[in-house]
Amino acid sequence: MFLINYIKSFTSRKSKEEEEENVMAPPQEGPTLRNSPLNRYSPPTKYYDTNSNYTQISLMKPEPLELPSSKNPAFINMPKQAGFNRVLDGLKKRQLLHDFRLERAADVYNPIQNIGSGAFGIVCEAEETSSRTRVAIKKIAHASATPTLARRTLREIRVLRHIKHNNIVRLRDIFRTNGPLGIDVFLVMDLMSINLHQVIYSWECLKEEDILSFLMQLLNGLQYLHKASIAHRDLKPSNLLVDENLNLQIADFGMAKCYHKEALRADDPDEHCFYMTQHVATLPYRAPELLYVLPEHSTAVDMWAVGCIFGEMVLKSEVFPGRNVQNQIRMLLAVFGRPPQHIINEVRCDRTRKLIEDADNFVELTWEEFLFNKNRSENQNIFENCEAVSFIRQLFEVDANDRLTIDEALNHPYIKNHPKAEKSYLNNTSTCPFYIKHSMIQVEKLNHAKLIEELQKDAPSATHQELHSGTRKWFEGAFLRESDIYKNCGEGFQEDESNLEEYQLQISVCTSED
Ligand SMILES: Nc1ncnc2c1ncn2[C@@H]1O[C@H](COP(=O)(O)OP(=O)(O)OP(=O)(O)O)[C@@H](O)[C@H]1O
Image (tube, rainbow, N blue to C red; front, side, top):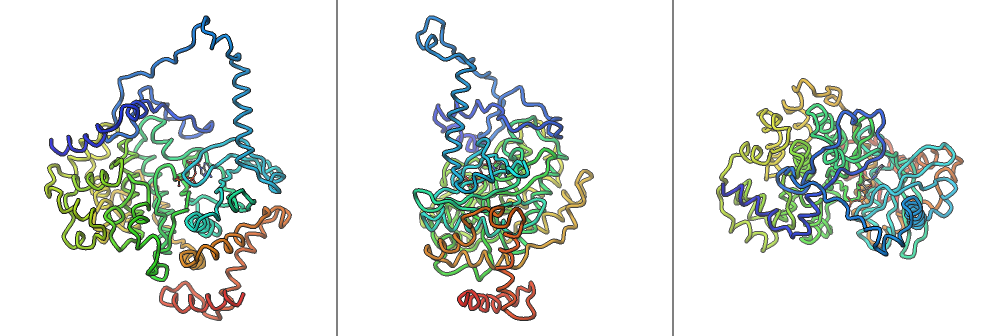
């Protein structure tokens, strides 16, 4: 009981306003999904607490909107509904055109509506005027203003520019404009219908076959990246985009990083700074090695997030919904107990080490009991399958060395032997090209001035249509820029880890000659 009450107490400390906000999480309106398999889910009639530990079905119905009485002067002066909506639409359009002032690219793309925003970007739906294709444009405002923003933008461009994979969002175009605080970078991507966060919370509980399909598509996309030692580092449901045929694509590569030893330098801002490490990945999906500020990170941080996302699809609530770093650490300690001494010895932050050392080292519930107690959703039967429980448990190994790797996850009996698992995802041998890895490694080494220089090269001031009259030559051009470097590196270029250092040296020589 202690553990249940303890974990419950994390949410009970929410302020009244926060609670009111959370309980009433009405279904979000996504884009129209006519003819989509998602139509087999109807929007919930009950209202779910999307942020709580437990999927609480609130008995409270939303309060009816208090309409002003006809005697109220506010009502008399209120514009008629249709007129009011028109004014509102006009304001939204003006805001959209203000946010997406595309300058020269305005002839090529016509912004239609705002579809989302995050900490770093605003995304709108737009039309490519020549082909009348609907696309998504992400604006990263004043991308050159700080080294962090410039590095984030360059990472996203460098990963997405050459990737062709069904489960990774496709970048169609890149261009920049001059904003008030340096350059604004625009990434044009395929338009997706909705994100997985909306799917989880806007419809009834997902069926196991759909959960498995999303999970396998996520693993498939990740396998492609992890084979090149690239970690996404910010996996969460809102960064997984879904189209109307339930195809899933990984998006938002601003935190992506190549974990090759070459990329990790002594003064690496992410790897060796307590402040930065604690800001990698969104809190509820953050792996213990990041939370505990351990020196070694790897692609295993993504595998922890996969466990969180799988759990959230089943439970319809976050598995570890911490509200701040300390709260999140305490939650993991309550569920998994104190980590082994060799891990505690490596913790580089004294406050965190003290928090861990002071924690009780007993776990009152088994993992199965923990999941069962959290599991108030209609999907209970999934965690009655011991293979599903073992799968998620192995993704939640506190010691990253013991956690399932991407290949082990795809070969886990829950995934491999499940009768409803789509087997085509299991035999994927495609690998992320070698030059992506190299260009990622370079990003980590650049100072602010160099980052801006590279950003200006990678994000031209004109769209590819303008530059190459509608062909994809611009992309081929970008590709050539990389392969020319490799050509200069001489014969024998191959995707061989052991030769990486040698090529690295040659590439830096070639680049400086450019
Ligand atoms: N290609 C796309 N099609 C449809 N919607 C998209 C697309 N790309 C992004 N979005 C939506 O726009 C929102 C913001 O995008 P994104 O996550 O890339 O921005 P961000 O600022 O990098 O976010 P974060 O705060 O997670 O770092 C997301 O919720 C996502 O659902």
